[in-house]
Length: 282
Image 1 (spheres, rainbow, N blue to C red):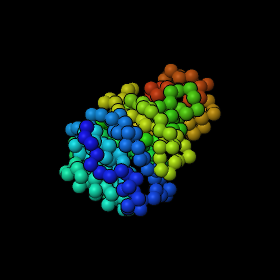
Image 2 (cartoon, one colour):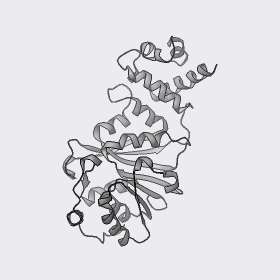
Image 3 (tube, rainbow, N blue to C red):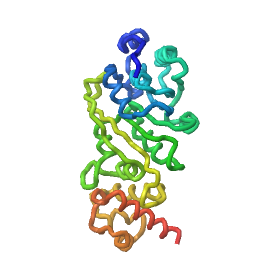
Image 4 (cartoon, rainbow, N blue to C red):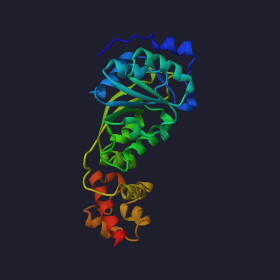
């Protein structure tokens, strides 16, 4: 761990005129103790390329470098923030690469160029889209070793939700099928400038080397879309968009046809997807 050689973040923001833009989903974290706590949640950092999405003026970027990151790649869409990030790069020579562009279009495999982790206070307006993209990588295990990400609390709770509650849904199944998922801690809205309307949460995800039971992820997405698309209905009704009579499929997979989607565990959906795929190709 190293001390921070740069001025306070508030001073940097004032000097560069960096007012947060709602259109970019920006909410800045000034508390270095908090950003360092986020960085530590992703430890170890040394030996990995740490990819950060939406660094803004660089509060978390600085924390990552202070906590031992040897290579950080910061992807920033807001051109106003580049000058502030360049000051961090100058203070930590050779350790920070700034990529000016859209995180939704980035070539992450190329940027990682080896063992990598993602640590980010994700822009709220693209957070779920980014996560879904990373979770549906065609090659698995993927290019990242872990994801340590900030979401709105309600999204974080959907990601880690167990079966049986209203939070459990497609995002829960997709995430938990491919990763071990854990909510680390909440971040009060007062920690941000400007304060968002909601509490945020840090989630840590570690890819499973071999998700079980094996199934085609594209089929799993279709099955969960059908099941949760009509989540108040029993599966024998909601799955009729996939096949005329779902009863035999559900029975073969050991799932009661009177159950609703929120009552089926992740491995149950994987069994359904694997068996349904064989029916389609028969």
